[in-house]
Image (tube, rainbow, N blue to C red; front, side, top):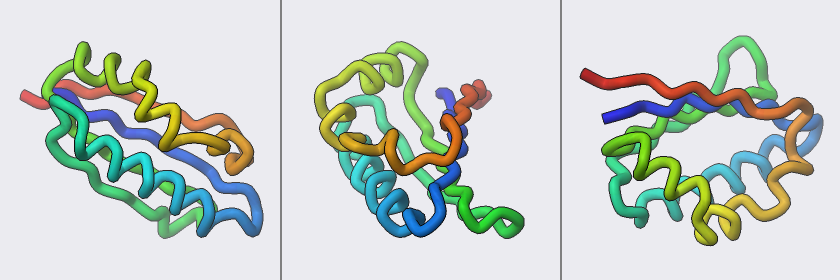
Amino acid sequence: MIGVLTHHWAKEKRFEKARHILDRNGAAQSRAPGFINRTTLLSKNNPSQISSLVIWENDEIYDQWKASPERAKAMKNADSMWSQPPISERFDIP
């Protein structure tokens, strides 16, 4: 299994819309093969930061999700929400 931790920083006055887009993406992920779990994390130190930890069966499954039309649809217009590019890192889960 792998965990994918991604940090997003919403533009000022766009936090709720940004969170809605990420929740829409999470709902789409939950229907994808190989999806295990997703947790949204809201920073206590930075009110613009929304992070997510998503657990997948393996890297290949996650790569398929990232390239899928379902993800593209779920994340439509998301780029306009961020004050800086998202940062994502993958972790092995033993």
